[in-house]
Structure formats: structure tokens, C-alpha cells
Length: 383
Image 1: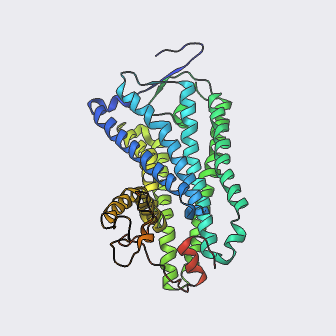
Image 2: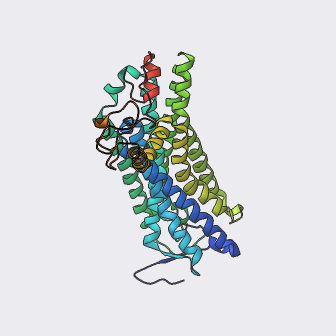
């Protein structure tokens, strides 16, 4: 253990319990982290590139995925580096930075999920007033609040923790968290008491209060859904299921982590890996996957994006085939088309639907739907 006047080095002792399984754990973490990053990037690209997804629900989903990437990136590259190296250490300042990013991720996820629940509540319970309530200005306000409030409150917590005198340098974790870092202090002090007191305030503000608001929103949604038609009820369930699954998964993981941190001295140290997976690796991977699979509009846009990326090559091949049937300098040898129909058969892609055989979907006549059904179908609440 090295400690100097200018820098304090913290040693992570939890890696010792992994033993010879370090290589296997590293591979699992690497694959999980890469999968989470790729899934998040794909989902963010689809939301950004598709104008039909530029709605409050998907804007907040974009924000949720960004927060998840912040949390996983703040931990797993450093954990993998520690697994590969012989010494598992970190400077105290880097430890505080990692702690800050982790708690911004946790608190930010709860706040964003609360904003998403509010959006679903307005959409389902007040569809006629949706555009009046969820204006562009209101959406921006909620985005700013959901990002800046966790950053500010967590920054104060990290500052108070950094003021606590340190006299121990062994951390029985894979990464830094506030409780473990606070336990490095020299006995009880007033600054530690203040830090713990403020920590309770942060938990109530950024975890307990959002949980209560989300549960209240779903209570209202269920109450309204019971009074509408079966079709509207089905669409309400389909709309809320991804958010509800993500909320339950993250809440359960957070609760388990809090309980584990309080009784970790009575539990084998190998549980550190499972806890880390449960709170920081699995949610950032599951969130984009769950929304990508369960949300019909995202699935359609994903398929549309794939077709758009592949269609130039397919249509170029189709044009080449059609040119072989064209009469040189004369009319086309394709029944039902004259020479003017093939003016663009010079190898340049044409729009889907201009050529026979390219599957263009026929226009569909709009169906008469009740306001709640229409709102739940396109997430815009246009009635």
C-alpha cells in the first residue's frame, strides 16, 4: 500500500476471492458490456434518425439509455483492467469520480423513469390534454430537471464524503461506493455524521419519492384502464409493459444492492460480482433490448432502417436485370411500360414503389378509434 502526501491509493480486496476464474469473468464482463453498448447505440441511432420517434416518450427513452451507458462505462472498463492486472488499485480521487458517476447513474435512472411514468399517465389518463400539457417547453424542462437534479445532489454527497479523514486503504468491493469509502474514515466525526445524514436525504429525494410517484401514476393508469374498452385496455398494457418491466427490474436490483451493502460482512465476498452484474451490467443491457422488442413503433423503425440501408444494393441489382429486357434505343420490352418509364435505368437507385416487384405497402385507410386508443397507438395523443 502506497500513500503519499499528494495521493492516496486504494486497494480493492474483492478481486482476491475470484482467484483463477478471473479470465472467465473478464470475458463475461467484456461480452456483456459490448452488447450493452451496441444495443444502446443502435436504439439511440434509431430514435435520433427517425422523425416519427421524435416524441416525448422516445426522447426520455433516449435519455434513459444515455444514463445507462454512463453507469456501465464508469465501472466495467476499470473492473476489466483490474482483473487483467496483478495490482487492483485506484487513486482516491479516481475512486470519488467513479462513485459520483455510479450514483448519478442510479439516481438519474429513477428520475428518468419517473418522468416517463408521468408521460404515460398524461397520455392515457388525459389524452385530450396531452399536447397542452406535454409541450416542447415542458419536455425540455423535464429533461433538464431529470439530469441536473441528480448531478447536483450527488455532487454534494461526494464532496462531503471527500472531506472525511481517511486512515484505511483497503476496499472490499470491485469498485467504489459511498458506504465503503465512508468506512475508510478514522472513527466517527461530525463531517461523517453530516455526510450520512445528507445521504439519507438524497435517497429519499432521488429514490423513495420517485418510487412513490411511479406507483401513483400506475395506480391512476390502472384505474382509467378498467373503465375503457378491451381494445384500449390492451393498448394501454402494451404501452406500459416495457416501462413497467424496466422499473421493476431496476428497483429490485437497487433494493438488493442496498440490503447487500448493509449485511455484506455476513455474506461470502463472491457475491460482489453478482451484485455488480445485477445493478450495473444487466439494466443497461436489458433497457434497450426490452424497449426494442416490446415497442412496436421501434421495431417497425428498426426494420425500416435496415431496409433503407440495404435497398440501394437490392434496387441496383433489380435495375440491372430490368435493363437486360429493355430494347436498345426503343421502347422497353417489359409489358405495360414504355421507354419513358425506364429513363432512370442508368444504375441509380429508384424509390421503392416505382418498380414492379419491389414490395411497397399499399396505403391503408384510417380506422375510426376512440381518443384513448388513438393516443396509445401512435404515442402522440392526437385526437
